[in-house]
Image (cartoon, rainbow, N blue to C red; front, side, top):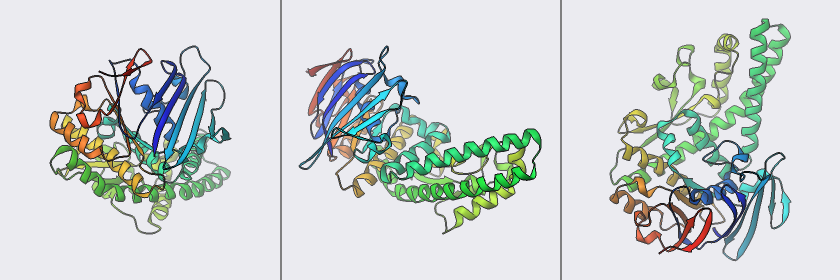
Length: 390
């Protein structure tokens, strides 16, 4: 799959933008703050309905305007699809495919992309929430129906927390206990499905991440992934996942182990949850453990190793998506990556991505990007597509 044309209206610093794209490598080059990242952010939004830079949609609407429009023409073989989303400041967003209205949440079914940006260093150095989001976004790209499961699970956690807070404030009543058990059933049903889906995903990612890390870094540092499950935690493990014992980490789960472990954890930690007024275990409290040479990447990996690991996670994601896709490769987007890499890593990364159907790259300095990735180069200045770069 490739994007043949991108059109923006009132998106970020663009009043309008019309960009023709080709298969293979496309380079957006321009000084910092000119709008290069905004182009790949817009396509990332079409794929995930989220931004890698902000948590609220209205931040992407140009100042003073009520809405922004992202429109992309996609091509796979002889088939062409026109996708469009209108991001509204004060009303629900709207989406269309081939000029027919669809539910906005269905948009990612039509377009698949993987974006790497400097913010992705937080996958290695940041909080568990970022790693959970990385897994969940990939799950939804592979199986869009899981978007509804994630939404329902978040709603159940919120409702259950409200009940726990009420019980803590007033003392648990028998009627509240019965209601809590109803929410427990729903929590376990949805949560165990997410746990199992994430566990299977991590198992599939592991060999691809190891191979991608070696390809980018040029050395085998034994990159490894594992899941840290809150449902196996005791009361002493709940404060500070950094020091959680190895017993919480698993590569795989037996059939039914997620649901059984979840129920047992809720019973075991009932008093702790009532005391704190929050749901203490479940996929919303899990973590993805990243290791190099048997040590946690967070805190031990160098700057170059952290970049290589973060890149490996995204390249492995793209590999999984392309392997099972019936509509071609995902569009691979590299935002301001090459400036942070030494010459050898630049060349190895270029070799790792050049066989994807389409790669979009942003760079402030043209010479930072290996020559094989500069085929279609577009210059950006002050929110305007200037034309071919020199």
